[in-house]
Image 1 (cartoon, rainbow, N blue to C red):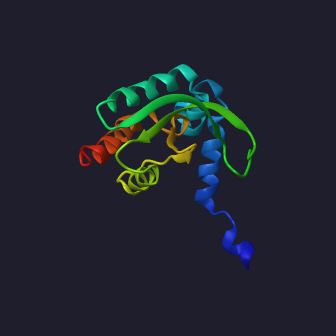
Image 2 (image 1 turned 120 degrees about the vertical axis):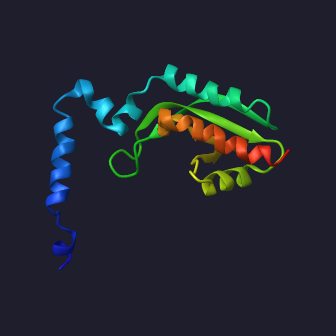
Length: 147
């Protein structure tokens, strides 16, 4: 009974076929498959994005740095493979790092990151270009109400 419940239907196969066909043209793959675009972004692009975010937060009571970091593909296929990346590292002065992380997770839209070395990190390899303003806005909202 489990095989019947978990088998693919026609829609799943059609989506899989469409995705696999994208790989026939490697030149356009980053434009057509978001995860490939994220994986192939240059360090320079990520640094530029990080500096934009950091500059937009200078007026608030927090320390912001743009730092080299690593991203991971996931726990299934490549659990130990580290991909060079860039992160925005935030250390707030007026609230705890845990509270910052919680408020960003609960924001709409949510901003996901992780806490490392007592700072909140946003890995820019996991953020699309069109999401950068949203990341800045959510962080700014938190600190505009704390002043």
